[in-house]
Structure formats: C-alpha cells, structure tokens
Image (tube, rainbow, N blue to C red; front, side, top):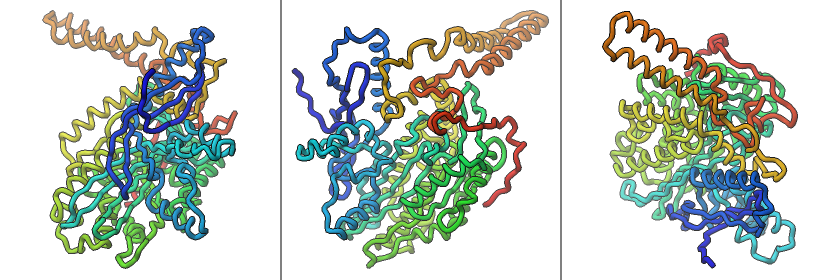
Length: 585
C-alpha cells in the first residue's frame, strides 16, 4: 500500500476504464494575501477509482485511455493553476467585499466557499461537478463534503513585499483565465452564441499597506474580438482570415450577450481595440466597430487605436496618446482619497488586439501603472509631487519599479504561453521601459516557435482543454482516434521535398562546375523548391495538427453555432477591398 499526501481534489473524470480522480500531491506557496496562503499546483496524481478488469476493455479503449491520460497530464503541466483553501481567488477584492456586505445586510452567514466563486474562473468546476451535485442533492448534506470542493484558478499570481517611500507594501497581480470557450490560439477565436469569447482573462492589480490598513485593486479584462471569425491553420505563416457578416442577427445577439454580461459584472465597459486599421486586420477592426455600434452609449464605449501605426519605429511611449484619449474614463476610475473607506470601480477597460496577447499586454501595463500611481496617492504613500512619477517609480523606489516591470512581464509571458504556446512578444518594453533590438530578436524566435506549435502541436493541446474542461465527454462506443490518422504519411513527404530541394539550391551555388551546369542545376533545384513549397501550401491543411475530440470540420469554431447551424462565412482574400478606416487617435 502507498501513503499519499493530498492537498486537494481537482475532481473526477470518466474515461473508458471508469472514473478517475485527479488530486493535488504537491504545492508551492506563492505568498500571502490578506493573511491567506496562496498556492500554485506543483504536482498531481491520476487515480483510477473503478477496479475494472482491463481484459474487458478493447484494444481501442486501452489505446484511447492512454491518449486521454496523456492529454490530461499535458494540460495540467502546461497551465499554471492556483488555489487557496481560505481565500477565493476567482473573485476580485471588490466582488468579495460586496458578498460580505450583502450577507451582513441580510443577517445571513456566507454560503459555502465553492458556492461563492465566479463560475467563469472556477476552472475545475466540470471536474468537481460530481462533488457539487452530491452536496446539492441533500443526500450528504451533513458529511462536510463542502470542504473537499476546492476551486482552482488558471492564470497567473504574483505576490511581492517591498518598501515604497519608506512604507512597507504588498504588490500583487492576479490574472484569471475563463474556462468558457477554452483553447489554443488558432483553434479558439472570437465569440460563441452564449456571448463567451476566447482567451478571456481578468487581471487584477492589488496594492496593500498593513501599516495604513488600506488596500486598493484595479481590474482590467481582455478577450478575443467578439465576432464569429477564424484563422484556420494550413502551414501558411498568416492563416487566411474568415469572418461572418458583422451585421447578421446571430452576431448582434452574441455581442449583446457578451457586453450585457460584462456590464452586469463590471459596470460601464470601455472597449479598446488595438488592431491595425488598414491591411490584413482592417476587416476585423471595421467589423467590430459596426457590430458594437448599436450598443455604444451610457454603458458601452468603443475606441480604436492602431497600435502598430501609432507606435511604429519602436516608439512604444506613444501609448500615452491612448491614455490621453481615454483620460475622462480613467479619471472616473480614480480612487477617492481618505477618509473614504470603500470606493468601487464602476467601469472596466476591455482591451483586445488580434491575439489579445502582445499589444494588449503593453497597453494594460500602462493603464495599470497610471491607476497604481493614483491609488498610492490616495493611500497617502505618494504625495503626487514626486519627480518623474509619470514615467515610473524609480525616483521613489527603484526596487518597486523593478518589481512592477518584472511582474507585468511575467504575467504577459504566462498568459501568452497558455494560449499561444510561447512567451509574449514585446515584453522587453514591459521589463525595461524601452524597445530594444535584442527584444526584437527574442520576438523573432518566439514567432517561429509559435508558428511550429500552432501548426503542428496545438490540435492535441486543444483536445486537452476540451477533455479537461468538459467540452468533450468520453463515449465508450465512439473513438475519436479510430480510423485515419491526423496526418497521412504521404503528405509528410512534402516538407522533406522542400528541405531536399533547398539543399539542392545551396549545393548548386557552392559546387564548382561549368557556367552552363550552374545554370541548369540551379534552375532545376529552384524549380523543385518552388514546386514543393507550392504543393506544401496546397496540401497544408493535411499537414497541420487538428483537434480530434471536437473536430473543426466545416465550421472553424465548433462551439460557436447552435446545433446543426453553420454560420455563413466569407473568406477575406483581399483585405484592401474593404473600406479603409481612418485613425481615431
């Protein structure tokens, strides 16, 4: 017998062999927040609960279960998961305060820990469903089963202690990834009919001073452009863009649901779109503007900011133009100075670019810096007269400035890694405050890695998300791995032909031979290289790694359309054919 120390139960999942428990066997202490320990999942164990005789399983069942186990392990290892047994990581400080106030107003105790979570960020909710059903059924109401339901959050957490202007402070950053519409970069784009968007992340920045018994937080969100759109990988570096009519009734209903939900949670929503206003991304910017137009008013605002145009030639300091443009909105988010006990954030910035990663990270860190400066002034830690405070905290506390940059850059890398497979681009600006050529070289390396991962590995990563988060349920009578392999062997010859023909071109250039032979061999190998590259593009869709559990099939977003409905799409062959959109800022 084996003795196993378990720090929590992620939940249960049913495979062909039966029910499997996923338990936490190791944890790392990230830090303490409001006196509560915050942990990161460091190791886990999959435990088969059903003593099923494997002889009764077919060879296909055993093969499939091995695949499922591998998907679960890879997904748990790839993502950063956090938990606390006494603190609700899924809720912002403001929402937690509102829950306490509501309970006190009604003279009622707080409901069990797991019932108070924000279901968007209760990442293991599908796995914990059996436990929750058992409690809610009333059959085991007195068993204390509530204590075994542990909400786990996916995202990023950093908690740092330091001194700011001779005052000890705690600086924390929490990013919460939504479990709705989960997935990888090119396999999960846009919106679904319920209004959920891909890569939706809420980021909360927290500053606390125990000496002054004050704390403040600032919340921003990001999420994919809320339209029905897709970029289906086919080995091309930039996949072809497909976009459903932004004026369709289906799009109108979905985007309204999305913003109604955001407004109900956060108040007024300021949607900041950072995509290019000309070229390849222009149809997305125009489509978003057209689709959101009927919603713009007291509750919703929309602003375009062509990040690449405004900040070209590495002038990332020009994000200040966007800050000035949104000055009135940011001013409304400013905290009240003491003696105000509690000031609510009544609006939120919803920032997006195409991936909601690189450009979004840069801009969110700038907004967060501004909010933090105002909060520190309201808390009396800064007077407002400090030099160079608009550009950084170095003059007041070099340690704090360094920590702020590191934490936001680490957050950018982790959020990006979960979605795209690599760290974020442009983080040299976030880490150092300026764009550098070394940073551009790192971006180039990450871009190549993204291309490889997104084309040849992300199908399996998408399967892992779909299995673990309950999008796909295992059916013993159906095997997603039976039949034709993901990539048929004959298509694997195409990349080999490309490499061989390019080698032939180099060989022709370097080998000593007559001029005529040089011309003949160079022409022959160049033609072979061109032909093999063209054939690779033509059959590229056969080479990429596609999801197997929830196949993309005809519709490039399987969870977007109602059952039996495939949204009418148009593929954008020539983005310049769309109307040119002028700059807002």
